Length: 331
Image (cartoon, rainbow, N blue to C red; front, side, top):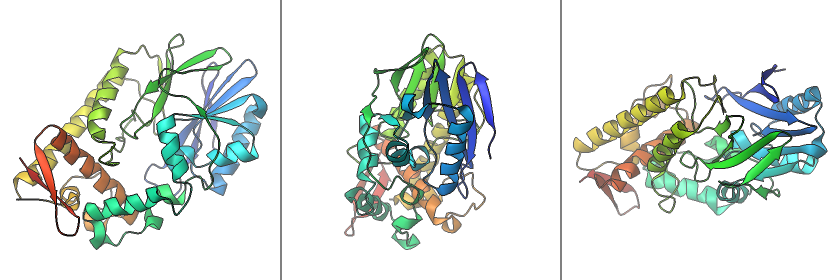
């Protein structure tokens, strides 16, 4: 059983393993004040993590009738147990509207959203990898049932005892991720917006969502203007030098954009897969062809986000070939 750590008065953390996933673990936070409690995110929808969460609840001796669950964003490592909390435990769930709608639509295995994931993989040139939706971690560990929620969007307030949190727009990593900021206590729960040692995956969602990397880079800048004594992110160790980490993340994406532009410059046109294959990746298998299939979804999505960033800046564009595969080229 994972250890519970007290981070400051009223704020606790339990690091829960994510078996078989490169993320390795997730930091599940709990705020406890004046008989009320709030849990931030849930982990995957697995029996092991359900047990870890139930042990957490029991060890902290919280009253579930006075407990809130806040889901920062739609990814299954953050929302997997959402329906269990709502249906089985009777906990009121709070989440931003944008990500809730997408997550709720994806509860059904036959949802058009999952079909769109495979259509996007085709557009990206991934047919040669013979990917199946079952290979996608988001599909495997998602909440399998729809559940009710209460809107908590940027600017909305959420009170837990002495804590007064305000929703913050951290879209980019997902189309509608929301952070929680207590200005008086200088506490920020940022989900996957800023991570230590690893970089948040910035992916292509759809042409309707648009330039997710541009939005992400804009939204990490706003953190610099916030007074923060305690930054609580969802994976790895806590960040102490916030401004320094922001600059590292900006440089990382600048390098990524440079890699994409170099590949475009050396070829008449490229598929998204071609770009991903020529990017450098922090993964044990350096050859894209040998990546686990689950990681090919993420790598192609990240490459695609960087191509769309270049397109938004007027430095690249694409055409669709006769099979509907995107062919990007340098302008």
